[in-house]
Amino acid sequence: MAAGLTIRAAWPSVAVILSTATFAQMAAAHDHHEGVSHIAEGETVSQEPIDTTLWVHIFVQMLAYGVIFPIGMVLGITKSRWHVPTQILGTLLAILGFFLGHAHGGREFVGGNIHSIFSHILQITLAAQVVLGLYLKLHWEKGFNGKIRKLIRPFHSVIGKAMPILSWTQMLFGGITTLGFCQGDHVGQCAAHFIMGSAFIAYGILLAITLLVGQIWIRRCGRSQEFIDSAVIAAWGCVNTFTEHRWGTAWVKNDWQHTTMGIIWWCAGLAGMWLSRDRDGNPKRNFIPGFVILMTGWAMSAHPQELMVSAATHAMFGYTLMAVGVTRIIEIAFVLRDKHSLDEDGRSWNSFQYVPIFLLYAAGFLFMGATEEQMDLVANSPMDHVSYILILYSLAFLVFLFSNMLIGLYDRLANPLSNAKKFGAANGHLNGHLAEEGQIRSAEEFELDGLMSDDEGDERRGMLRRSGDDSSLDTPSTVGKNNVNTV
Image (cartoon, rainbow, N blue to C red; front, side, top):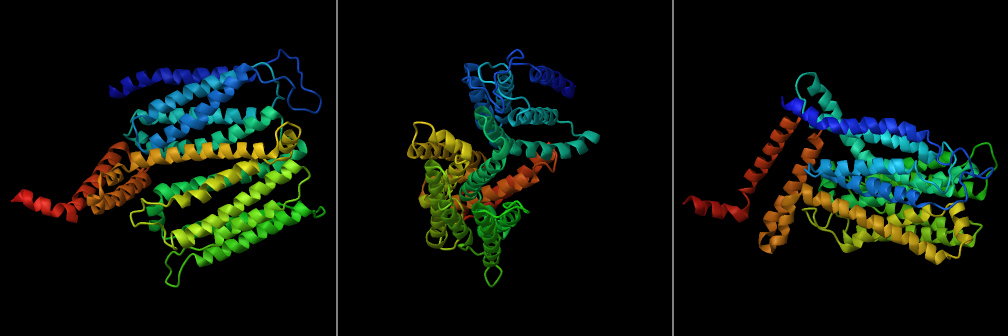
């Protein structure tokens, strides 16, 4: 009976999805400009300006995929009751933006562009995520459905966490499609700039997550952070060593620089992995990842460029990377003094630790903004290189702000007990204990999520909370009070 009511309640949402899929096919076949193309021969976009409808499409999709869905992802990870309403709002805006993208006038784009192709992949992924979410909401856990549910829950979780990455990729595709960039011979260097720039931003986000909510996890995993960083550096270096030169052709200056940069990455990465343990096999901090970034920045600052604005942008990118390396080494050697965190509870950090993290964001945007066509565009505009670099740093600050807001939202929802620290130093010992218990319990719940049914999950989480409450009775700040109350 309850399942039938749930099905009837969910049917309007299913109908919307099916209708959207039907009309999406019609929209995909729709001709924006009545069969008359104004795109010049050899070009991928026309010269008309972007009209209001397309601007609304851009901002609506950025709001849905860039803001609302990431917030909904965090709410879903923390099991917030606001997860479903937030994702419904994002889905409605995404559907609206999808149709606006097929209803605009003004600038025309060549058919079959990467942004158009990837939009259908993104819409299918979104529809699958909504369907999986509706199925989980029905709470079918008996018989065959119980077995299927164990597969659907982690799959739904993986898609949700992958959605910000897919959204970021689609937004980049939208930018280059709007300007008609990254076509023909420019594809290779465009891909290199956007992939490497996005990797620097992702590295900064991971460092921020580790700093704010992951210090206890690092301590529990039995590896130092430099071991993980060095392993990634070594793997990336191996790839660059054999892919930066087109084998069978003549070697040029850039080929030499890119290939040797790959060589130093895997050589240094192996050294960093070796230094990440002490003589007793315990995790140990080291300088290698920071030094590799420092050397990479020095190499990029001297990269030969034809345009003055390109040389200035690449030089600033190199200096920013050098600053990342220097500040990272200072953080490990002098701020943390080779420790994994400032305090044992993993809840404290020094303001200086944000410096290398933000500089990674800035380096990523500088490198993504330094493609050949972007440099030509800036060189032929009234803007100078200083203004352009300041704009890229401003974008880095916005993404840095939003990512920290998401991490802070997760921390407040996943570790509510740790916020008891604000009530005074008199309860410092108890609150530190509660903070660590809250983080460990949150990690255990996250690891078990998707491997058990909802009823089992609630029961297991209840056991974890009761065990935490029982252990808290033995703390020095409560033993005396308990004895008094029992007299």
